[in-house]
Amino acid sequence: MEIHVSVKAETLWSIDLGPLGTLHITNSFLTMILVMVFILIFFSLIARKASIIPGRMQSAFEIAAQFVLDLVEGTAGRQFGRRIFPLCGALFFFIILSNYSGLLPGVGTIGKEEVHSAAEETHARIAAIERPGDDSAAPAAEEGETVLVPFLRSPSADLNMTLAMALVTFTIVQVAGVRAHGVVGRIKHMANPPFLFPIEVVSELSRIVSLSFRLFGNIFAGEVLVTVMYAMASAILEKTKYIAIFAFAIPTVFLFLEVLFGFVQALVFALLTLIYISLAAAGHDDHEEEHAHGAAHPVPHPVGSAAGD
Amino acid sequence: MDALGINFANLVVQVVAFLLFIFLFWRFALGPITRTLDARQERIRESVQAAEEMQKQLAATKAQNEAVLAEARREAQEIIARAREVSEQNIARSREQAQAQADEMLAKAREGIAAEVAQARAELRQETADLAIAAATKIIRANLDRQAQMRLIEETLAEAGGRNGSRPGGA
Image 1 (spheres, chains in turn brown, blue):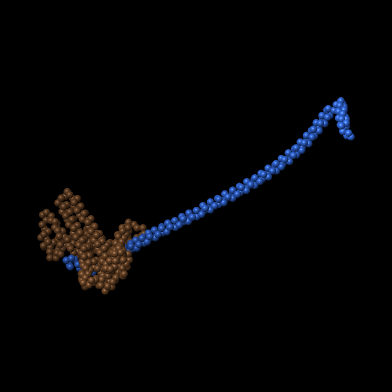
Image 2 (cartoon, rainbow over the protein chains, first blue to last red):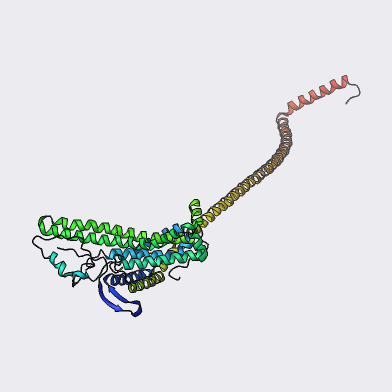
């Protein structure tokens, strides 16, 4: 049995956008739309019926929202925290549910069979557990193999999506910095001392890479791990029919781990966004002062929230 | 880039989609819930404040009540004391009046008794005199027979003769 893992999201169909290029409706793009629609409908319905005395669903939503809000207000201060809360909250909710969408049964496993020629292969074959007497996999890879293209794939396991979020974050960080200090102030702020300016620029740009690759790497690796565990479990089940309990126990342990990692990665992305924006808007002096006093410091010119509220 | 799955058109669409998602999520879900949280927090704060205020008022009312009660108690004590004083005065006065009345009655009684004693004495004397006279009359009437009368006359004459002899000029 060969495990097929593709680093990039597989295209289901394409739309020509003219000068912008071709929009590939990939499986993770489709899942992104589904997750967004689900979040918007589900949470809007909860919020629409929200009352002072909450129901169960409202309580659950409120606990999560309060958790992020406390984090944001605790780090950025009450006033400024409120302005960046829409971004951080949306990031947290979208990323955590994107991560969890990859754990649902059917995501990554239901799809269409496609024949890929060896020359077109961009996916990495990271592991192969061969069935006894099944030697057909190796020659097939050279001639062109039949692979499963899943209809759904976690949006976080697609670098395009994580990069899009990192770019949004990066842009808002820069806007916050410029709003707080002005263009000249922002450059001065970065060039202090002047020879550090190139390093600061690289550091700022590297955040795009670090944010996007961290999330993508963790979630993608997690999915690969779970896939491998499923494959291993099915191999165990085939070979030793008497200890079938292992076949279910092994992937379950890793699924629980993925639940944890999914939460941690969502938190890390939202938290880093929050910290980058706070740093850019508050400036070094303010930030040091803030730490010295151990309290949130008011930010001179807070940035407008990304939601345009 | 293509090997990693980065596609410019997709990236643009995903950025726009994500920005739209942030806006819609805040507008319809996160925003209202945050406002609900704030409203609840505000309400709790107000309730706690109101409760504290009420407790303060309660304490103030209690203190006021106690002051009023103490005042009332003091006034009651005063009234009781005054009443006692007045009643004692009344008792004393009525006792005096009773005493005076009693004395007066006693004096009148004594006077009456004395008058009656005097009258009784006078009447007794009168009666005694009358009785004596009656007795004397009866005795005299009983004893004065012929012989006795004669003897009495003789005695009387004898006495008178004796008296005349000793006392010249007398009858």
